[in-house]
Amino acid sequence: MSVLQLFYDYARWSGSVYRKLFTIVPWRTSGVAIFSLFSQFALLLAFFLPLKVIILIGSTGIPRYFPQSWASLDRDLLVIMLSASAVAFYLLHLVAERCVDIFADSGARTLVARSRKMTLFAGQEEFAKRVYQRMSRILAAGCFLVLVAVFFVLFYPYLFFVLAGYLSLSLLLISLAAALSDGVNRLLVEQTKLFIQTASGIGFLCLFVFMVADFVLWQGVGFMVAIISLLLSRQLLQKLVGALVDGISLYQKRLKINALFFHGHALSHTATVDSGSSIWRLLDRDIQQQEVTRFLVEDGRDTSNPVIAAMAWQEQDQQGVLCFNVEVQYEATNGKESREHYLLKIYDSGKHSLARREKELLQSQLAPPPPSLEVVALGDILGYAAIAYRLDGARKVPSKESSEARLEFTASCWSSRPSASTLDRYARSHPLLAARLYEQTLERLEAIALNGRGLDDVYRLRQEFDRIKGILDGLPCCLVSKSVSRHALLRTREGDVVGIDWANWALEPVGFGLPVADRVLERLPALLERAAIANPELVDIDPQRVMLAAYMAHWERLCLRQQYAQAIRLIPAMLSCLGAEETSRDDASGQPSASLLDGG
Image: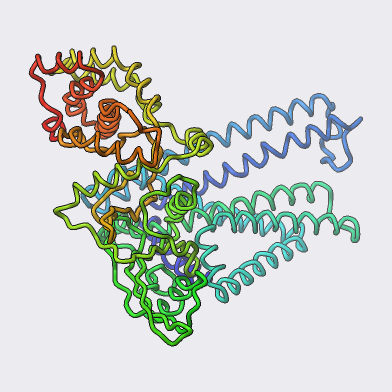
C-alpha cells in the first residue's frame, strides 16, 4: 500500500470517527480541542516569556524591539511581571490539561454507553478515554496548524512558503521511494515514528537556515516576529509529529475502536492481511520459487537449476512465524539430479527479536553445539528474517512419544556448556533462577496458608530459603529451551531428539525445566552420566540438587501464575531434596509424593 493511499484511507476512517464524536458529544469534543489548543499556547508563552526576561536582564535598558508601552516601566518591575506571567501561563497550561482529562473521560463514557454493547475487552473504559483524548488532540493540532499558518501568511509569508514546500516535497519523496522499493516501504512501516521525527528535525533545521539566510542576505523580518516564528515553527512540527504518530497508532487499532464506538460494528480478532505487502505473500508459488530458492542455495553448492519440488506447511506454536518443509531438486554439474529437504522458518516483522535470539544461540560458542539440526542459511527473505535447517531424514516426534522426547531433549541441552564470558554476559542481562526467588513471595504464601493448610511447610521453606538459593547458585549453568512443545521437537535418523525452536533459550542451573515426577528422579543419574561425557561440570553432581532446581523452577512458575495453593503443596517435595533428614521427616508426616504434587 502506498503512503498516499494510507493517508487517504486514514482520512476516510478518521472522518467517520469525527462525525460520530460531533454527533454524540459535540460540546465535550469541542471542549477537549479548545482546552488542548489553549494549553499549547499557554505552554508556548510560558517558555517564551523567560527568554524575554533573559534578554531584558542582559540589557542596560528596555530594548527598542520591545513594545513601546513598556518603555515607561521600571526594568526590575518589568522583569518581575514577565517572570510572574510565565509562571501564571504554566499554571494555566496545567489547569487546561486537567480540563482536557475531565472532558475526555466524560466524552468517552458517553460514547461507550451510547453504543449499547457488553464489555468487549479488559480495560475498555481507559482505552476509550485514551482514544477519545488522542482524537481530540489531533483535532486541536489541526486547528493549531491552521492558526500558525495564518500567522505566517500575515507576518512571515516567505517562511510559510518554505514550510509548505518542505512538507509537500517530503511527502512526495517518501511516497515515491516507498512505491519504488519494497525495502523502503517496509522500513516506513517498521520505523514510522523514527522517520517522522527525523523529517521533523530536518524541517526545523531548514526553516532555521532560511531565517538566518533571510537576515544575512535579505532584509528579513522584525526581531520579535523572527523569535515568535522560530518558536511557532518548532511547536508546529512537534504537534505535527504527535498527530501523525497518534493517527497511525489509532488507525492500526481501528477495528477495536470501531467495535467500541460504532453500534453496527462487532469486535473481530481476525487481523487484516494485505496480500501485497505482508509476510503471507510468501505463500505465492512464484515468490517461493524465486526468493526461497535463492535463500536456500546461497551455501556454495556447485549446482544449477535448483527448483522447489514441494513446499509443505509445517505446524508449530509461534504466531507470526511461518514454517515450511521444503524439498529442493538440484541438477549437479555432472548432470545427475539430487534432492534435499530443509526446514525453513520465516519471521514476521514484529517477530524479529525472536529471530535475533535464535540466531544468537546458533552462532554462539557453546561447546558442544546445542541439540539442533544443521543450520544451512541465516539471513532474510524479502526483508523478513529467515533460518533454514537441513532436515536430513529428521521426523516429527509422535504424540505418544512426546513426554519421553521432552525429557531426552532437556537432558541433551545439559551437554552444551557456556563459556565463562558467555555466562557472565548473560547473567548481567538476565537474572538466574536463584536471583528470581523473592522473600515477598513467602509473605504471600504465609498469608494464604493462614486460612488453610501448609503454614508449617511455608515456615520451613523460609528457614531453608537462603540455603536453597545458595545451592542453586552453586549448580552448573546449562542451556535450556523454555518452549519445548511437541511441534518443536524432531527425531533424527540416529534417534537423537533435536529442537527447532530456540527463540526462548536461556542459561539456568542444571535441572531447570525437568518434569517434577518420581520417574524423572529414577532416570536422573543415567541422564547426568550421559551429559557429563561432554560437560565435565556434571561429573559426580548430586541428583537431589538437580531435582531441587527442577522443583524450584516449577515452584517459580506456579507463583508467577498465582497458583499459590499448588505452590504450597509442592514445598515438602522441594525440601525433601535438601537431604536424607528432610526426606525421612516428610515420609513420617505422610506428605504426598512428587508425582501427586505435580498433578496438583
